[in-house]
Image (spheres, one colour):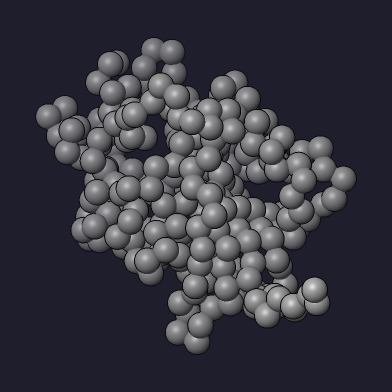
Length: 240
């Protein structure tokens, strides 16, 4: 039997590995909130990222990016640790997590609607995340950077270590061209998402294919957890 050439090769399809940072502690032992801009990975977070490192050892990256927050930089460094190959790395403020307002200013009776349901407010672009950064400003910041990355044709495989809401913006936009899916894309600590993207169209849109979503190597079947990310945060706050 003669072989048939694969006419779908050479389409310029590239692969993105989107990673959320590992677990961190946002509160100290006394319940006092820590500055989210400077918290490092916890011991659990390091173990989670080490599991991620092991399953990615055979993957070659041309480019590697992270936000400039310590927990994201640490996650990227650990993902890339132990490799014989190397790639250019970069950290950027554009990939910082959406900025929350002062939780201490929010009344307890609003927690169920404003904290536990925080990501649903993204459907009202002028609303702020926990009364902080506006969703439309945040989405514009992340997608402006991402558009530049997609326009760069020098890479074939890239890893991005960032944050929960950043990944939600990117995946929702790639799948639907807007943020309509954002509230429903759970992103657990040290999770891995894989998306293949074609070359951008003239209008900046891109055809994308979701290969893997919210995979956590340390708990692949999500055993023992049915709460959302923001529901868990709300419960932690109410327990203090």
